[in-house]
Image (tube, rainbow, N blue to C red; front, side, top):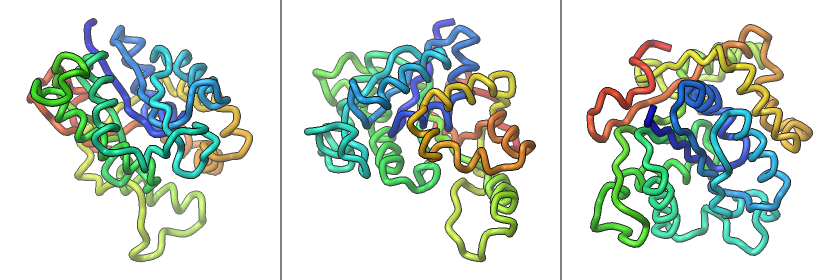
Length: 257
């Protein structure tokens, strides 16, 4: 199957948390899958963990842009923060990855960066621009031959799921007017059942041992009741942005979360 899925993420471990089931599922079905990670440098501990995670998910070797994490200068010594890199430079580097891999589908975060992380927000902005720019032969002419993906899928969570899990974790619903991740349920266009690959997704998350040690990536999931945690691992949700209208690019038929 000559069908490519390219995920663009901010940090090592995001590929497993937000799109791990999708990547594992499509790799198992014979698709080409890969991940661009915008921060952290080769040779760091987290880069090594990323390599193990991608091996579990069947998503090839790390494609590290090597910028620094906004909050961790040790992530890429001597390199600028991803947030501080010139926008045109960052877009060009993602365009280069898109043109080299030539995916039918690109995955990244929704417009809120899935939960408001500044690096996630910036990856969303850069990827939106890069997916559009990659198809123009007038732009970034030294970054490879033009290629336009069929669709961009924005990883998100239905608001109803956020609210129900919020109550499960904190014992009470969110406060009125509180800023929450996710989008209203009706804005979710694509729901993937990745239950068959949930154990692989969980294993990929645990490959990021440094994050497990500090409780970062796993904090929400491990604090959820078992049934709620199983739901989060077995389901992935997206908003679809179409570029060509090609139906064969759809990850799944639209459905309610």
